[in-house]
Image (cartoon, rainbow, N blue to C red):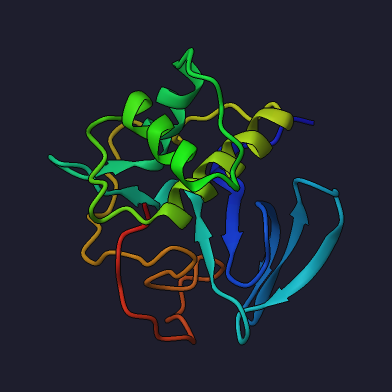
Length: 169
């Protein structure tokens, strides 16, 4: 069974990426892409961020995470270890030079390298979901902090944790 990029989430406080299997008012059932274990995650403790909703700061307009991941996939640069901060920054300077390195944290760049490895290992096609013809995406009015969402991605209810908004690298 192929994993859809549109169903992937990052969960605050939990390492790695997860497939959102089902949701309830108080949380969701997620499956780890790394160890394939499933568990219930409460929105009282954790926030969910759909990968499709994450934007990256650039020197021009912000771009969706998909754009950076696609550039990583097309690159011939050697993938650095996600623990080597200097190598990770040099990698992104070569692969995505328009990234705003003054606002994109090293920890976020490391996370993108790790996530790319997980997505590649699981053969996930990195693409945004397509809206049915005639429908337009709702405009995004606020910016999300990595791992935080404006509303709970599980049920569109207000998020229970308040975080200072910032863009994810």
